[in-house]
Image 1 (cartoon, rainbow, N blue to C red):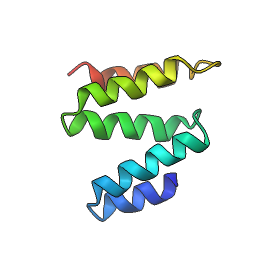
Image 2: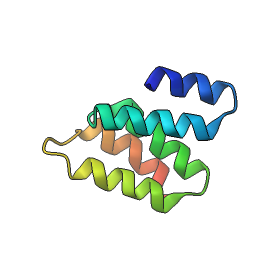
Image 3: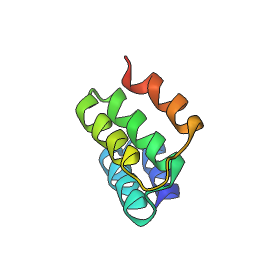
Image 4: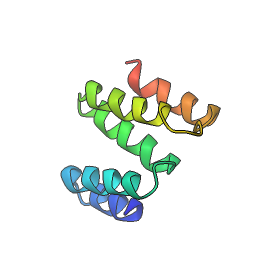
Amino acid sequence: HYSRSKIFLAEAQPVAAEEALRTSLQINPYHHLARVDLIRMLSQNGQKTDAINVLQDAMSLALPLGPDFSAKILRYISD
């Protein structure tokens, strides 16, 4: 599903890309790149609240996603 999201983005299909990213996270909530891409996409589309919700979901995982995740995410939600 993550790979499909990249194809959908390249084809200018953001709704399908978002659905693919969300499906990817349902299958594997620890998929770092899917979460980063979803937060980036939501933030760039002005959906800051949704982006923050995806971030909060990550923070509630049993195992943290780590400092690389945090560093990448902060620049998208701080604008």
